[in-house]
Image 1 (cartoon, one colour):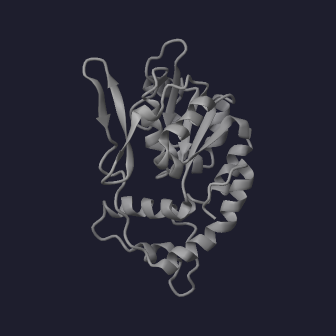
Image 2: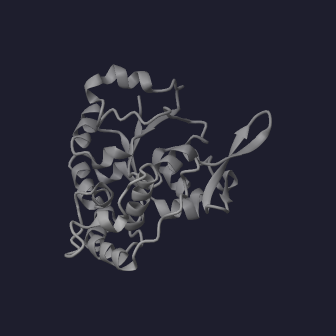
Length: 256
């Protein structure tokens, strides 16, 4: 069963963190996102256990389900499962995260409305639609409040999605320290995929030496051009929530 969870956030860099962690010999993780604590809780713990990979003594099992962070019932369920779990949250500038979220959804729909049409309740008043999922997810302070009712801040680690791209080795060193792992993952494991500006990893292969592995083609997807006035309105909307989030986690992520 897992000793740690990557609980969020969607389009923040959770898959990258898990893929990078897979480089560590002391880390085991299931393949697909289990979604146990939000969608499949009724299946019970034995079902959850069946999804977990075999691990040896001294190895750490971790799973990733980004929707855990924003689902209200999940903190209580996770606490009831184990109050000692370590929790990782990958966060990103909520404005760029929202655009990335929209871009992913729009790429799967031929008739999708524009970002500008979706982000406001109506375009005249320019009131931000806080019920729209790409906007709602980025109000990190609101979601974190539910988790802090059950888990102390010391059991949570916040990864900067921006720094994860700019300097993955440094950000992953902090993750390894938080999880109590040997600092195995370092700068030798990463290189930049210049076309998309996204870090790729060198996976060790006993027979052939290291071989490159890049995340799927959906990573680093080109975002649509958004009206600058819409960006400014969103930044104004998120500013007080960002400041509150910084205070809650004692970190400044540089979005304000």
